[in-house]
Length: 387
Image 1 (cartoon, one colour):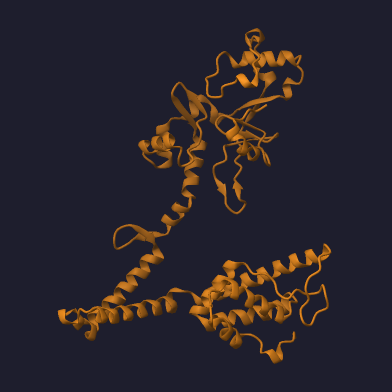
Image 2: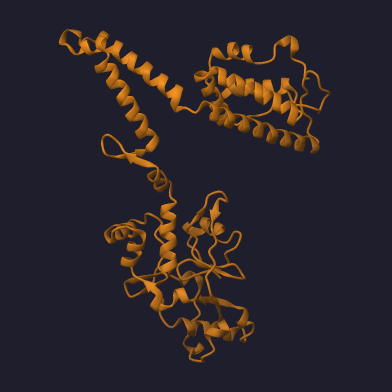
């Protein structure tokens, strides 16, 4: 039996999903067959935590605990749930309470009642202090103390508390350090460089800033018509606006010309759109198999083909961005996807084109330019039949 406070009851439902049956020693857990270390290192693709088995773990049962015969059931006490204070220290000997519980069961099945575990990494001589934990993680002891006091940074629970001293298993400390190195902030730091102001920024941003700095310096100092604008008589708002417009044009041109890998983005969008179309097609067929009727396209009989499929808003937004910045490249994406969907997925072109039209209309941010753009990209009305 496990008791929870009312405020903690909601999280209790997730504690025992898909594995954990018993928690011991600061988060070590048992799934009915094996013991695992506290869940710390996140498996991002699996949306779970990596399971790290405890080497040489030995399960301790109630029978094992009572083998010595030192426990006395007469010293145990039976209490009501309402009388239990989870924040109060336990008074008495726990093994005496276990002995009383066992006696009330007539000592039946004690070899199947799991109590705890032992393992080399949990041996007293192998446990480490808070100072060791801080050193392994690469933080200052004062920082660790602050984390613990404020309940921050997911500091692992200690495996043992002796008096006021907390002790951890070294593998638990190492896995906490491992998770901190896999944190999004650590990932960003791994691809960062100092900026002009000294603070770290992604290397791509640092390279872009350096390139634009050289470009702006050339515009402002090496270009004679602008260099003269540093004279006092040229320092008017209109003259500054002219220089600002030239710099803005230079920055936009550079970024779209060299910073954005248009070919790579084009290929990525094509695959994303085709995958979304295939997924929508699978879902649509599953709905049809369940007996739900769909609307038909102009050349289809009822329940054969929907008028269009759904596209994820973020994919549509990216396609709209490409159309507003690199229209010809976006047009190539649309025509390629339309052809591939027809050849590989059997989706008629009028369905794919209507799918893209609806997606861009909803999430592409193209405004009044949408119809004119699509008129030059999609199949002319006279040839709109599927091939």
